[in-house]
Length: 406
Image (cartoon, rainbow, N blue to C red):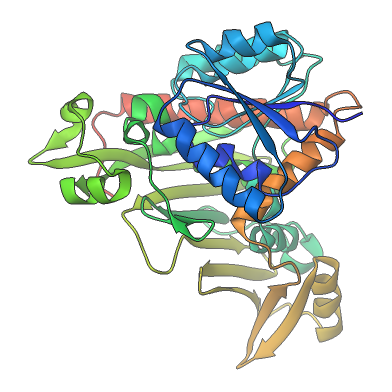
């Protein structure tokens, strides 16, 4: 029997991306609980574009002043997707889960360190909850992580500093489904959206903890955390939002420039792996978002770098432990990649070439596939560890004083 998926207060374009493709496990009628306004209209326009491409959803907008109360009173939703304003998100997730509604919600979840209490309260819930971990489906990230986890290839983590480094650069001006994205003005209010230290870093921390083999009994050690701003001029703000910087953000404006706390870096250790993750936001780039990763093992070094133009994943074996070509090709095939050997550098290319926008529907499909079984205790424990670490990083960075330089 098809389940009913509801959308609660869509404010971020990620609310629409799970609907990019049809899903046979869901009723094609999707109730949406939200007041009228530009956030809702942008969501409806994006879903309409997906329907034009064959998605086949029928949106049933339920206008309301209190969307959460309306969703719960209606009693139709079995699964809810949340992607919008993040202030109080975990309180809404908790209310839904305690009412028996399964929840798939976009990051960030922890806007303030005290938000963590609501997540702890649903740790043992019967209803499923999960965040939209799209990076677990990103082909280059998956390939890098699978190779880094192969001790026969890479050896043990080594080096004086972090053996693992994960970095990403994102852009405020971008396109979605081929059209320029108009961001809401509230997105630039970190009290609503959350600071960068707890946003995209969610994906990077998740990858690092998985690579470390972090279990329910493990507590990562936080070594450092810092945050810094991206300067957004008035003209840039208008180009991205179609409006002027609102008076509500005046406290973050200096000489007409908004200082957006969008960037963060933290360094931590877990089960013998020391990692540094860094997420940065810039105004825009014709080459799209950029990603870098490095892993230093005793047997080889992995290096990943790329953007919308393409990626390079290179394997640099230690001179004392050169792997044979046959073994390298076997590792590449096992990881879903092709090995290329050119100008003395070993490069790997994943077979899967899917893009970021495709991964939301995959996450939704995987989430739905697990609803007939009890929640996965390991993944739930990992989520708790991930958000405890991010909450601790935010508290430490704030305690250190004003934001630092990049």
